[in-house]
Every structure is written in C-alpha cells, then in structure tokens.
Length: 437
Ligand code: GLC
Image (cartoon, rainbow, N blue to C red; front, side):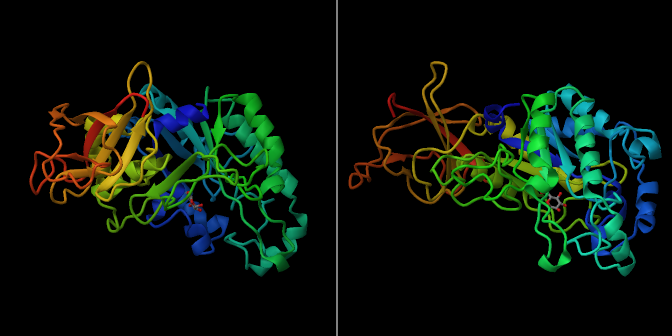
C-alpha cells in the first residue's frame, strides 16, 4: 500500500500476540521481572493457541471495519511467530505452526491489508546487548557483564536483517513494516544508542524497497529529528506513530507540510493480553478517538491483545463490534476523509472529503453534544448546499432559522431533535459544499 492508500484507509487493527499472553499481565513481563531465558521458557511452552483463531480474528476485524491489520511477528521477547531459518525460537518449532502465515492468509481473505510489527529490540538473542542496556531483562545481572565483550552486535543485525528479508519474501505482498523501537542507552554503559545507523537503517530501507517496492514503514528506526525536520534522513519513515495519544493539532514538519501519522492506542491498559477486565475505554471514547484522528489528518491503529488461546477478550469483541456498527452507518465520513479547512466546532468535530469523480466536496459534522438551538457552523453561511443525516440518508431542512440574523457569516442548521441525538455517541451530518468552496 502506498502512503495515499494508507491515508485513505484511516482505521487499522493492531494485534499484540505472543507467548507473553500466557502470563496474562504484560508483553514486558520478562523485563519487569528480570527473567532469564530459562525462566521465560514456561510461557513459550504453554503458548498453544487454538486452531483457526486467525480466521476468527479476521472476521472480527472485517466486522469492525478496519482496512489493515498489524501483527507482532516478533516482540521484544524475541519469540517469532513465523518460520525462520535463522533461529529455532519460533512457533514453527514449538507447535509446528507459522502463525504469521495463518494471519496473512486469513486477513487477506477478508480483503484487509497486511502489516508486520517487528521488534528491533531482542531480549533472547545472545548478541543483543544485555548488561547496561536501558531495558534488557538482564541489564543488572553481574554474571552478564563479562559476556558483553563476546557479544557481536553485527551478528544480531545480520540476524535481524535476515529475518526481515524472510518476512518480506515468504508471504507475498506486504503492505507495511511497523518497527519498534529506538532509544538511547545510559551514557556510562559503554553501549551504542540503539537507533538509526546502529540498526544499519539505510541498508534496511534499501532491502525493504528492493523486496517490496510498495511497502510503507513507520518512524521507529529512530532517525535524528524524526520526520518533522526539514530534511529527514532516508530512514525517517513514511508515517509517524504517536503512542497512546492523539496529536492535538495533527502533525506538520518544519517546512509546514503535513506529515502522515497514525496514533496507536490500547483499548485497556496493556498491549499484550491482560486478564484484568478493567480499564477498558468506553465505545464512545474509541469512536471519538477515530473521528478525532481523521479530523486531524491521522489514522487510528487500535490494539487488541488476544489471550493465550487466541481469543479476543470479550470486552474487546464488544468494542470492535460497536465500532463496526457505527462505521457501517457512518464510514463514508471516515474512509478517504481528512481535516476540514474550517475551525474545530464546539459541539464535536469536522471531517472532510475533497471533491472527486464529479462529486462535490463534503463536510461531515460529527455532533457529540446536542446543545440548544440550531447547530452553528461558524463562517459557513452560503457555502453549504444540502444537509443529510448520514446514518439513514434523510435530507434535513436547510431553511435559515428565524433567530440568527445577528450572525450573517455563520450557517445554522435546525436539528429535528430536541434534547437528544439519533446517535448519542456521534451523529454525523453530511453537508455538500457549494462548488468552489
Ligand atoms: C511500546 C512497547 C511495546 C508496544 C509498542 C506499541 O514501544 O514497548 O510493548 O508494542 O509500544 O506501540
């Protein structure tokens, strides 16, 4: 997928799946509890998802209305969900399954584009720095100290590049690589900063483009200044990936150009599966997060952490279904849309679709708050020619209300509902713009 297609798609599903699901706490448990590979092995041994789970996921994803999905092919624990010639530390070896292949096949079948999350960090590989590293599970284990001199980071990088080569060669067309992540090491550690050319990033970008010319990738190879500087490095990425937040005013580089971005967001407090059903964001919050992202020219990558058997948690299922139902009615105000050239309204958000294929430009009013009186559209008097409730296609009366004569520049729409809205989460009204607006 090219970057334009990515920006049309707007909504993706992130799946954090791996042996850490077995601990039911966090994909970071190995680091939090400073576990050795041997101690962590119990999670690897018990990681036995049920057959066909990916088909179930793909059906949920389709119903939720996502256009692309990103799977953790390898997380920081280093355990690979794909068959690799470069290591035995894979599901192919433990349960004789290539979960990445199952994922690709199931999601492709549903017409959903494919993204691979790949952790640059590796807490299993022997040649990845241990002692003194900012976050390695064994970073304070003195017995690791002496071994540091024997580690050869280049050997790890050969492995990492080799695995990316495998991922981009063995599964057909891949739409996106989602790297995670780069960081600076403590100054006194004697270790390099784990970013940019430490990963041999330029070489990696060449490899990616050679194998998959139409592939896009995120910004986490860790360039200096990221994507926002005037002259980003070649490996700066195709889109930025703000985490657990929606940039308040979208994203622009130093030259004032829009920068593609995708907010990644958990539904609860963890990326990997957690067995505490608390802390889930409300459906309302998630739909607003999607609308808010699009209203600022961004995408939303919403995460789910399936349990160890490969089931989406009940609460995640409910939310995905809820978003899907809303999108089924209102998707035209999300897909292919972006920011409107008008200031943010006080009652909700605008999204906007440029004029295309003989269709006029469309402004979508996402009403979160009914308020009182007619709906004000500041500065838009004379620019709107029809109003329609998107959910069911009914036209609304555009007659100018009697009480607004003091506001000649503003448009107003009489809403046919008093203290309610047909959709209390987000009622969407489509306005066709007068040509030339
Ligand atoms: C962080 C975490 C990781 C998660 C990622 C998603 O970098 O280390 O667990 O996969 O964010 O954005």
